Length: 494
Ligand SMILES: [Fe+2]
Ligand SMILES: [Fe+2]
Image 1 (tube, rainbow, N blue to C red):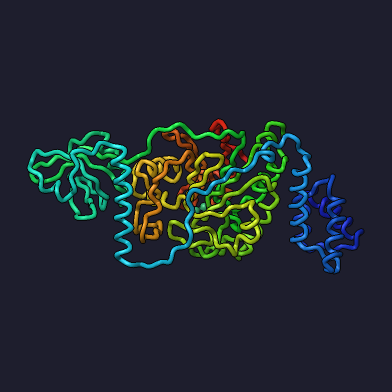
Image 2 (cartoon, protein in one colour; image 1 turned 45 degrees about the vertical axis):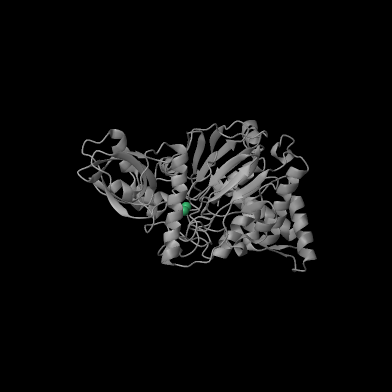
């Protein structure tokens, strides 16, 4: 502890003793962390009153402090201490377009077959609406065409080999040869193609074999970025990993203070006062038992406590700011995609007070008419394995490929667990204005065909696992999207 903090601690203890109060250690450290010269006396007075009311023999708990600090943050805003707050006066316009609830799990072969047929049909219909696929043949029909015939078909990739692809459609499995002298465009697309994705193939029959002439990715149309009438902003973040020893608590609290008007200068403050929404794309906490020997790297070893303590910090954010959260692979929710919202029991009061909206991974939500596709991004590990040009340090390339293949997690049976039954909810049927992911802990943003791609980094410093994997995270930054003009900036709290 620095000299200053030591002095603050002594002052608080003296003042508390003067009021006959006892502070438990957690309450004391929370008061020290949130110390404010101008309000400490009234805060201690209120605490004394509260402890007296609760008949707790004037022992002050961390919960009492947290509640008062939260109230103070809210009242600072609501009584207009900061007249330049803009977002407070703008009515929230949130529309949940897609979110998934828990489905009963059955590992039934027929259900799995239907799931892949559903994927094939949905992406086929996108392909047909986006490209000219005539003359079109099913894979079975294509194989029976005479030499010299040309045509198009739609396939799901099963395996990729140096000289051929093994592909399927709902009827049969077949080989499609890759010509030795294929074009650069075709080679590049084959290198990027990943298993279980659905694409169009332009083919020619030669020697009773099908030869690939080109691949047609379903892709997204070029569009104008969606904009709102209201001049408010969205803060985009993810991968807080609360509970990890590597969680950057100071930087995270700095962000919360900034949201409450604690910016260093006028520019920073006016930027903060436009924030109307915070979107958190998963991995809110580090969880427990997520990987072998994780407990050695945990600061808080109980998952319930991890959520409780994180929500306590989030409760200090002014309540005119609406939060939208989804689970990641570290959160308390079923693992297979689509993941339903984080279990309600962990979200406590926060999940039901209207200020925090807990949705599924993935989900689609409209903020003032701007459509956000929010997805944690677990499948980026598989994409980095199977696709050239995709890697952990370039998540935007993986995001671009997901949009080109119109699927968030095509690969089945590798690292990303999929709920393979019934409808495939991971097909990107509706094109968003903003595509927001996390998971790889690297901040990257750019625009692809009018869609703002944002991988929003992390609040966790480099872990041992990341050192072993050679991954360099970019912690303590967040993205800010201005809904009125599509302007995007990155802000650091390091
Ligand atoms: Fe993460
Ligand atoms: Fe993750």
